[in-house]
Image (tube, rainbow, N blue to C red):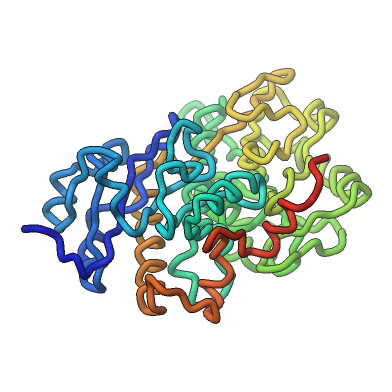
Amino acid sequence: MPPDSSLLTVGVPKETSGQERRVALVPADVRSLKKVGFEVLVETNAGLRAGFLDAQYLQQGARIALDRAELGAAEVIVHVRAGEADPQDPFAVGESLRENQILIALCDPLSDSRPVAALAERRVTTFALELLPRITRAQSMDVLSSMATVAGYKAVLLAAEASPRMFPMMMTAAGTLTPAKVFVVGAGVAGLQAISTARRLGAVVYAYDVRPAAREQIQSVGGKPVDFGLESAEGQGGYARAMDQDFYKRQQAAMAKVVAESDVVITTAAVPGKRAPVLITSDMLAGMSPGSVIVDLAAERGGNCEATRPGETVDVGGIAVLGPLNVPATVAHHASQMFSRNITAFLVHLKKNGLPTLDTQDEIVRDTLITRDGQVVNPQIRDRLAAPVS
C-alpha cells in the first residue's frame, strides 16, 4: 500500500560513526507516531547494532528505505548524534538534506557551532535536543538525562571490571572481605545513577557536588554526601556553572584526602559548551593506592582527571584511569529505547504545536530550534559563530 501523501514522514537513518550503535527510533514507538499523523521510514539495518531488526519495524507499520536517497524524501530526519557522526555522513553536515527539511538530533552546538552554520546554509530546519529547557513538561523529552542515566550505570560496571577488588563486603571461610570505597564526583543524573549502582553492588559510596541541593539527592540513593565547605557553583537549569581557577584549586585541595582513601573514583562534572574542569590532579593520583580506578565520564569534554586520555585506559603508577567515550552507545539496546521515547515525545509535541509550521512562542520549540530559513536563530549559538576563533 503506498504511503498517505497527507502524512508527514519521519526518516530514521543508520548511524555511521564507528562507535555509535544506537538508533534514534525503535520499533515499539512506530505506532505511537502513526497515531498522531506520522509515517515512519527506516533505513535498512538502522537498528541492527542495537538489536532491532527491519522485520520488527515492518511489523509495527514502518517502511524500510533501501538507500539514503529514498530516506532523504522524508520531511523529518531523526538522528542520534548528528554533530559528531562520521564526517563522511551527509546527514552530519546537511549535504544531502534539502531546503526546509527538519533535522532533530543531538548536535552538540555549544561545543562546535560550525556544523550548525552548514545546516543553516542548506536552509535546513534544525532542532538540537541538548537545548531542551529544564521544565516539567519537557521531562519526557529529556534525552540528556536519559543518556546520563545509562552512562552512570555503565561507569560503575567499567570500574568493577577494572578493579582488582570486589565491591561488596563478604563473609567467607577465608575471612571477611571489606567493601570497596567508591567516590562519585558530581551528583547529576549520571552521578546519582552511579551511586545507586555502586550501592547495589555492595560498595560504600561517598559523593560530592557543587550544588547544595544535591545533598538530599545523594542520600536518597544510598550515598554519603561529602561537604568541603565551598561555595555553591550551581548554574541555570540545575547544571554547574564554570568557576575561576581559585575555586578549582581549593576544591582539589579539599578532595585530595577523600580521593586518596577511595578504591574507585567516578567523575561526572561537566559544564555545557566548555571544557570539563580538572578535578583530579597528578599529585592526587600519586596519593592513591595501587589498584585504584578512576572512570572519567567527562572524557569527551577533555576529562576531569589530569591524566585522562579520551578513548583510552592509562596506567599511572598502578592507578587505572579510564576515559570512555560515548558510553551510552555501549548499552545500545536500552539506550535506544530511552532515546526513542524521548524523540517520540518531542515529535508528538511538535505535531500538537502545528508541525510542519512551528509555534516559536512555545518554550520547547523556541529553545531547541537552532536553524531556520537559512539563518542560525538561536542567539547563543549565533554569538558563538560571530566570536573570533581564539
